[in-house]
Image (cartoon, rainbow, N blue to C red; front, side):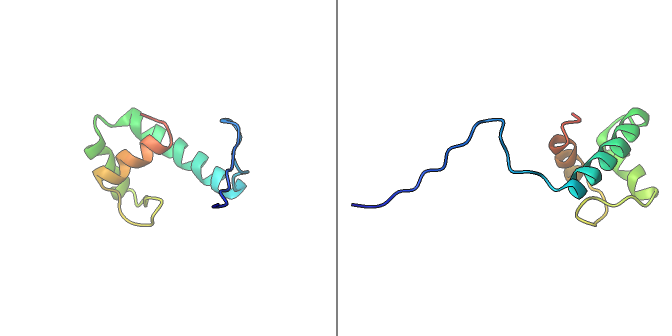
Length: 77
């Protein structure tokens, strides 16, 4: 017989998040929300973020795809 291990958890329960990561996410959410109000579309928004020297979470310049993924992760779209 094989030994199988099963891990169960409630839907709402997650491992405790890093408080530093939460602060960075909140700051990024605030920044992107402000740019969303001023810009018409994601391409313009990515260009403006790069013009102002704001880097993506990976440390690179913003592209359409990275901006779209980040907004989806932060649930801003």
